[in-house]
Image (cartoon, rainbow, N blue to C red):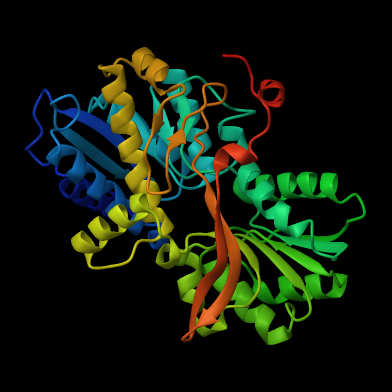
Length: 400
């Protein structure tokens, strides 16, 4: 991305966030960083979600009577740009905390910045377990259920399949590597009889689906773990359908049930994959009904999972600052450890031991309806039920 486009995008994001010249000295400013230009299918609904949250918070009187302002920057999908954006938000904008990020390697880069600069960071989306465990730090908290949590949810169903020969397909960067490693670990613990017969590691965003599908087919697995998403997933499914890769084989797939990834598959959607996702059309709870009504009223569109993540990230940030009664970093950390709050998926808690929230995910199967991909037989899995014990976490996480 050219520098001029970067700054135009950043300026538009500031205006969209309600900044401009309207910010006052006593406003509470939160810095937000994400890969808007790289991954619009997720980040545009995500932006809509957090903007709705800002509107609701300010309409209800702000945070302890102060107006909330979000200052947003685009990292372009580059860890170095994300750290630069973080530095600008802290040093030039004077934000109280940092939020956001999508890709796992970028989340880790901003987490490292937060640790060095002693700044509060609420990671929205990055899923690698390293964020809260091996590279966890006192300044970093995470909203979304991690790779470990989603793998544990999927393994619950996958371990009941008769398949013994498994292959994996995942993007070759932090997220994909982490997801495959933890799925294999948890699956092998439940099913010691399983053989892992092939691994394919296409570059993120640049899959050459033909050779990948051919290699997996040659290994002749009985089941496949898929971790690709976005345009890579579309290419994999198209090529896999054409070559009959999925016929007679079970597929277990991270994230595929999320509308931002399922919708583009349309009538090519494979049926019967076991997936994590977000069947917004079949969730019948008061909390989700309220969110859905507000979102559709504002945008005349249905939410994606990104919408939920963006919305709850800013709601969580506001709840933490309100409880702290201050934007002092140490007071916000103390307030965040163990805090519980409502969400569109029900009450969640940020655990004190590892700063991971207990937000859960839906697990179900892919299907087609009226030429579109949908998620059926879905059930909500509470995040707290899929986390390791405190004793295990203490082994995984460095001491502050």
